[in-house]
Each structure stands twice: as C-alpha cells, then as structure tokens.
Length: 133
Image (cartoon, rainbow, N blue to C red; front, side):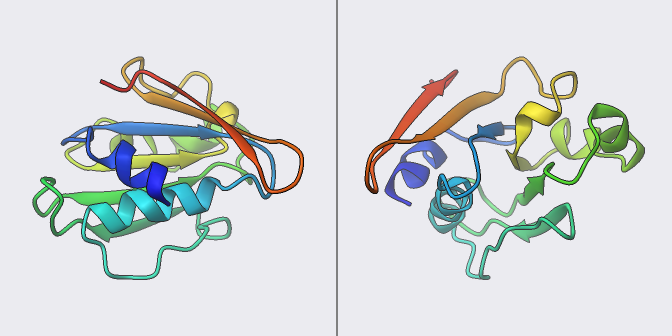
C-alpha cells in the first residue's frame, strides 16, 4: 500500500496506471494504496466480476476526480474492452488503474505508468515501475 501511495503522488487528471503480475502478487493492494492517498474512503476491492469500479477521489491533490479501478482478467482482449466503452475511462478526466493490463496491449496509452509485480521467495516481491515522473 505504501508504494501505491508513492505512485499516487505523481498522478493527475487523465493518468493511467497499468498493473501486471500473476494472481496474488499484490495488484489490488497497490491499488488500495493509490486510492487511500487520493482520499477514497470506500473499500476498494478487486472488480473482477464487475470489470470496472468507479470511486470519487476527494484529496491528495487530485481534487474530486473519478477514480476507475479496471480488472481486465475476464476480458478476451482489446476488442472486449472497447465494446464496453473502456477507452472512455482511459482518455477521460479521471485516474484509471488497470489490473491485468497485459490483456489490453492495444488500449493502454503510451503515457501510462507501467508497474510489474513479481513474487519472489517468501512474502517478498519485485516491483518494476516505468513511466513515473
């Protein structure tokens, strides 16, 4: 969660965070850290069955922006995402975090922050971040 809070400090209107990693690597936990920094008081849970969950950011320099938590795990790829109108969430006024972003290779904006989480021995993780300014 602490790393999510650090990532959130660099987010602004229109930011997209693309998360990659296997089951249980901590993608949702990192997303919860981002949400906490943005002042979201609702419980952020994995949106696997709803695909997209929308929250309202209340602080953290983000103002009252929409926060979209997207889970692409059950999508067949970019065509499914586009059929849902998913690109509106990525190119709108809010902040979007996408779990299983590797399933949406064509849809992820070039300016997205890419975060890959890998499990190591024990409870350790390796977290690689690209595109964060």
